[in-house]
Image (tube, rainbow over all chains, first blue to last red):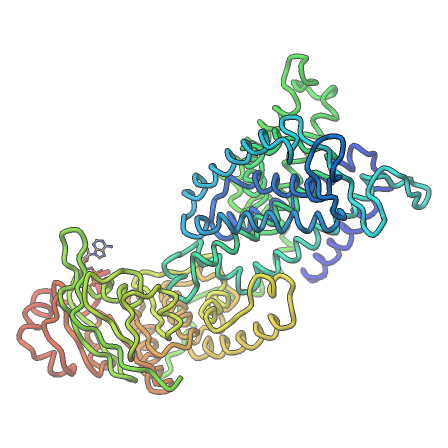
Length: 366
Length: 263
Ligand SMILES: Nc1ncnc2c1ncn2[C@@H]1O[C@H](COP(=O)(O)OP(=O)(O)OP(=O)(O)O)[C@@H](O)[C@H]1O
Ligand SMILES: [Mg+2]
């Protein structure tokens, strides 16, 4: 079987399984799945910036927050009893605007993101996290302060993503079932878009900047502008992830969008594999699903126990786990999980295509 | 564009803290010629290239391509004026395929941005197809076709040098700056590459500024030779004139006795 056909079949099968999930999974797992999809979208964005362009960012959580709270403000009820600002826009428009807002804020920062290189950008972006936390906790009108604010449910042309049940094939579809499909569609679109970018002219340019900045400039790539643009794109992916996360949580709180979240996203792309779309998706699934698995089965797992009962809490245990996974990936799997050893039969096709390079088979044309 | 314009360097001085790498150097690369820039190690040849390509700032002096002053331009602006260069030490992405590396040279000639590539607009696909075709022609010209799908970093050093030359040629430059293009190659590859450089000048009509330690190749290829020593120009002329210049013999050939690059 050709490699291409195998991978096509794999995608088809995976797609069918993912589409069928809402008919079989309980709400807990559906929600976990939506979190994973949202995280995957965010991780794709971070991987474009950090994996492919070599620019470290610790501000990813900040842009997730911009997306999440932006959506809440744009879609929130105007003049409601809660005293929160809301523009009362149609939710779809609000979601689009929230993503655009994340991009615009990224654009404001892009003069710095374009000029500051690699690890130094990581330090510069730290400032955004602190500013973000300060604003989230203090701009009560917009964010609801420490306790956060409720997230208005999405509705597309009158089709509401709330808990009013629509029965499909005997299964009541509530918010999570609907969000599952929304997440799947957005993730597929986001992944395809990122692949197009990476395989095309912009992808080649950012890889060149990452690997050899001087040469990239000499080749004719405007280094600062290109870096700035990819920072904006990455911010928009984070914004979209933020909107989807908010919809799944149904309540946005500032504490979630701190530095730890940024580090989790970095863990995702390191574990999954730097610079590839599939790496981001696999890493996001790994990092978001492990705490859920541990929470769900904490009674039956040794050492792990419910929070507050002594022993290691699931959240904490999962952090140890993917901390170890990061170290393992760096030491043993430089390409991340996406580059796990491929079975021999699958690799053969790829090897046949590239000729074994030798310096002998060069003809002298004189 | 209607062919290359003269590249004129006048009074070029570059100082690094306490060290004068170039001291009032001047020369002109005539359109469509191979102009060699030679000199012992540390003479300032690569520094000169770095100024010409906008990587280093000149302390004083000027570099003009036709009527355009280049000393205050950014590297990508200079590239867009039709100046391409290769590096003395390889500057390739090890994991990128040879095809992708060569296509990188088409960057300034193509337009597809994030949106067009991400959405796979037909416009982007057409552009990619057109430029991939031209890239294959250039690869065939250099004998790189068998390597197109291989990651550049896995290739032998000599082939990597050729890939870098190919990336520069893919920019369709008017002026090509080659910093030791055949250093580290085996004799077969050297001969092949030297012939390619001659044919680039003859068939494409480019101006070539060539830094090279292999005197045999310099004497054969160059129309004009400029000799630097400790950042100063000590001689200039045809290969024959320069070869017999007593100052050059003393500064360069006499002391070092090297016709092959030591590094
Ligand atoms: N960025 C820099 N900072 C400080 N000194 C530098 C820098 N670049 C070059 N130099 C110095 O300038 C002088 C000229 O170096 P350059 O690389 O131009 O020599 P070269 O003629 O290319 O020599 P080679 O034949 O060894 O390549 C050397 O003394 C070098 O140490
Ligand atoms: Mg040099």
